Image (cartoon, rainbow, N blue to C red):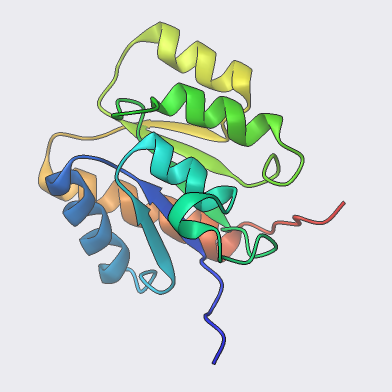
Length: 148
């Protein structure tokens, strides 16, 4: 039996932030077909079907990537750069969800082609609401075409 295509790739190394993100998506009925990468290298391997993901079908790309910036191995800005530079992945919407309030991170993310930049709210309820809203918009309302 074939696996269902992944709708969402979450790239997050912080276990608490990941748990909150998954909980917010589940609360908004957006929790099906999610893949998780815990560092930038794993995210790139997943997207480009390398390493332990070599058997994954390259045609099945996520509808959305939620990307943290502060990641081990390969940082989020470099992951974004590779996603947007490759013909196979450049049209995937990428939402930065980060604790960074650095103006340089915001400017560089948009220069590289990020679709949205959200600073993680510290308050639990605000975090849940923000993730729920971003998931609903990008996975339910937004129309995407990954075809040329």
